[in-house]
Length: 509
Image (cartoon, rainbow, N blue to C red; front, top):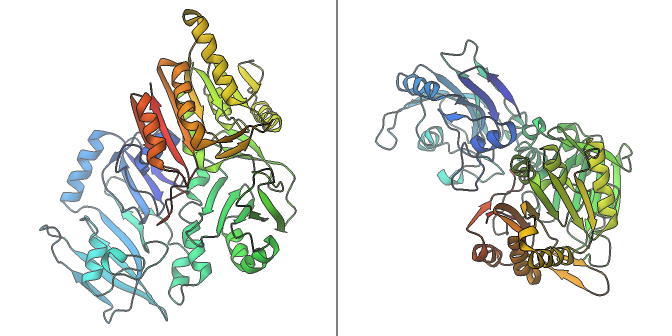
């Protein structure tokens, strides 16, 4: 996270493209909500940037600061400098004063640098109306690159960046350098430029809380490729089973070298994902490039550490799409009795233990996952208290056993305050008894509700993208008094015509 300035009244951040200033609906994650969740900062809006606009964004830290900001804007005491990319103009400098939404406003445009394909412009404003620069640029005949709403050419992001804010109550100007790929855009929209423009939506913004993130989500650059960053290494997943990992690496080598340089990585691994991994490994083949990758190494999220394995043909050991969910669990777990069902490598358990949970039960049928989970708990120095319990058992059997205990002695049954239920889409459960999430979901929902305390909460999720989201949501609504759909993290956006990568629900009994 790039904090630019903070005092008792003001907070300035370097906002990335791809996140709104504030949430649009319950369960959404704007920058306001993100700062509260991940940095415990309660901020107040005194100016905005569009979702796809990057750069300097100023918040007030108290209501009095917001009131002063209103006066500053009304009296036009602040000046904001933006840069953007668009087609060529015959003018070198001009002012557009077209009213917007029946309100007066003015934008001063300056041509900065012409390329063979596009031109870099500077725009100065004192107070902003909705989409002011975008609308005034379009009215001037130069709609922004990436601004299809105002008839600009399509691109992987809106090429608009707030580079400087002169604020009367802050002594020095607030500055953010222009993304270096902006200048590469002027001559050609190459694959390298496209991939860097996407990656910059997450890195280095997320580096303030973790050294892991998804740089390229499946469908953003290619429907058959996703690229993750784990510490100093990249992990490329290819979803075309007919294209071996070595061929995919050869095809993308130049792009991966550029991406490695951009995000300070030393090399990485390319894996071919199996569409039907049942009874097999998750990945068909693997190849690497760059420096040799350790068999196991540590990554961090907030102040916690987790072991990951990129050379394995199974999952790395840490699901990046649950970063926000883990933080939510931490905020809810203090003093609580917590159950982590389908615990995998126990990252939710680590967060709950670190937050001071009374006890955390990690339930999983896979002994290897629980061994990895014990290691994660130990390396965060959370094992000595004895409140971490590891249970190797089919989750369905464990739930049934808890329900029998409650039925046998309800007054003596100690319910659970917080339950995490993140089942796989499919799993072999031994003795020919397989697990299908769509089939098991209704009973999982009922059983979790049964053993939950009256004021308890539960986090449900799954990544069954082929399944009906309405089915999963309605099953929860049938038994829980309140169900909130939660948006996946910033680096797992919903790509057009594709289902959400993961469905996440926060439920109250």
